[in-house]
Length: 440
Image 1 (cartoon, rainbow, N blue to C red):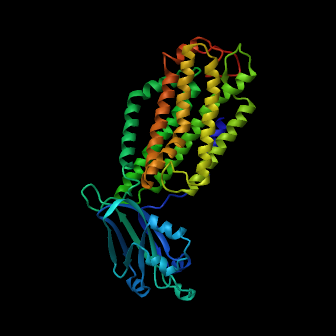
Image 2 (image 1 turned 30 degrees about the horizontal axis):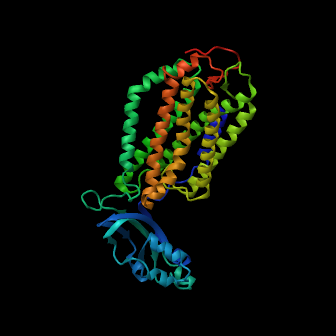
Image 3 (image 1 turned 90 degrees about the vertical axis):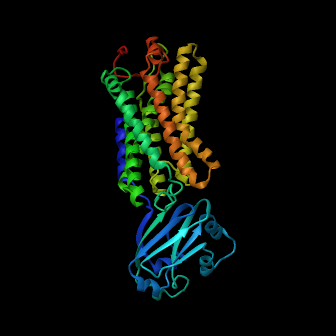
């Protein structure tokens, strides 16, 4: 299984997508691109408040005036209605339905987007006098380099906030998360390190669980660095955003490796080994093959989803096929684990053992089902809130799941008492190739 983890991480490194679009945009207004698409898509932003601002700077004013260059702003809902309308609108008719229009005839242009009753996504398009004409030769004129800054009002009402409505609060959340990780590390790092150094039957489990926790902490730190820079310039550090997502995917793979190793040991070994021997962390070809298939499948789906949605969020609302398949996979894993544990719990007579299995089931099922559950819950929220609800909710739920598992594996009042009973159904002793009694 160690090779499996290396394979998954290698796949992640080789196929990692580029970062998403920032809220300080740089590029070129192209007449050819605008003509081909009936308006060149520049970007979108979730404006809110009464004094949101769109600022555009261009250098080649003469070309912009000669082409009658303009920016068109559409509210997302209105733009969607235009796209889905059964009525065939012409190019000029579509552009005439823009809620806001700005002619570019100066070096710097400021457009205030005001009186927004609730946060809304706005799409920005470029068009000029060649956009709705069929003359290809005349549309092949000089492009116009630009820099565009999209801003929301801050707490004092001044347009200095680079975060869209859907991203507001994430900077503060990741700051608090990093602070919590730092405090926990100061309190528990030494005792956890001593527990890992002691070895024993919990050695591998604690190593994998701790690695997953460190990867999650690394993801939180990278996200905080990215958002801190983003709050100042609207660009951030795209590499740190991608690094945060890489750490998150690696953490997901580590936890899946841990839970599958234990669950395969329960289901397969219970069927094959007699009741006179304790169950072990199984590494038979059958269990390894199943684990390899599931982990590689999840890795491919995670990477596929990242290519579909390149915004720097580790969790998405799953509007694409890869996201839907990920949800189905997690639900299937949770149901499989739940059914297996239910069978064990129903025949177990010891209250202490049942408590152990139930606690472990809570941690595992919470890890697998929090994401699908939050995707369903997010439907009741507005569009701009959904990504934020899923991102914060999943991180909190998976952190709680890790706390549950840590308390279970390190507890001197539950797991250690259960293990001292030499139970034939205890699943968490590690096979070492020879018979040896567990020691603590």
